[in-house]
Length: 434
Length: 127
Image (tube, rainbow over all chains, first blue to last red):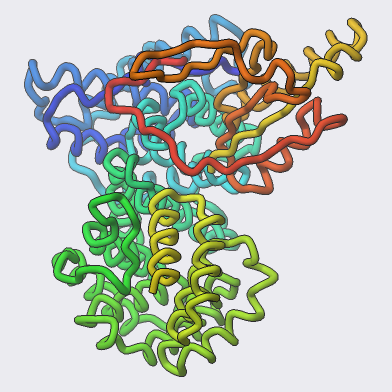
């Protein structure tokens, strides 16, 4: 087993430049340079470490020595030299099972002159490489937390320290997760090649799910952690934009990006000054980010108008768009939301979707119908805070304040997010005290 | 998602274990810790000293007043805890069942509600 952390120097915080444009450029180039290395030398673990070290070198050198004329070629040269060093020290330590490494003369690796011609402006090949890299990082042999960590490092260009901080785990733990994920990919016999046509849709769903996890990890953070973790939402959106550039015709990718934009638009209105959650119904809609709303709503409208391949991200984005179009809860087109939930329950059935649908049922047909719709979910969601929160809301709508207060109380007890717990406890007290 | 696993113990139980068995138990705990540190799911494992070593700190008129711990007469007290970061509750329960002590003592599994974030640049460098 490879010791962790693999190369501590590459794991140190790179954000020493204080120059956001350099940081952005490096992170954009990271998957392209890694793709170019991997096309020739496979071995995700060594190539990825080499690219991280090149990024670190760039971040520390460019501010004083100036940005090179061709940043991609510069990074590729430095990364290939680092790769030669890594391979040399590894092959000195033990005989590699992978003949490719031993068959590669270090001088060739270190020179890399012939590559530089390719390292000019990015082309279609880079898109293919970046997509292949995403598929590799979201390999089905990995757990979702490993997929997330590896994607953030290899495609997102974040350092292990940055990822560890975002997930509030020790850096050693995150380094261990990343290095283990690389071993598992190797053990699964994965190559640097796009998935087979037969698997492609399924694999793409996994990539989308990983990006959504990154986004949500930042979005549902509790108040104390919100500042650091908001970066993860921004990163989820950045990666979803990247995936959309790579696959402009994929409707679910467009739906995913639209859903993130429409959700993120409500960020400022979503948490009260004391850190309690503010649910959609109570949000100050003037605080929604109109730019993000317009972009997300425009994207989902255009997507739905041009595709017949409806999927869960598109439908969730469409529901979010209906909410953001309304000036208030009363103005909301609940019949439209109910129709969208019915479609969503068909393409992506599950108890939480049914719970969302029950709220729409209540808004269209009254609280009694909504409560009846939640009855069948009592088994699956008995210990889920959201089930009791919805019951509390619908019971309050129906005028049964005692039952509403105890439902909110149960919801608060089951909540595992501090902001939600605070909000639900406040609801319980408000209903109880009339 | 983060979970805390808690094991309670009592002096009677520890005293009843034969020395040879005790070494085997410790080795089993070491193997458990190593396995889950390597999988990236165990963030930390801690065991407390004997209840006799516990102190209690109170503020009396704004001044700390230190006395012996309250647990000397208590049969059962917190013995060790483990901080996990895992995919799901099922995974936390699965790992809890693998604790070597689960054979003879129940393990409590608590979801973590709140955790202080680390400030940028203040990583303690546990690696």
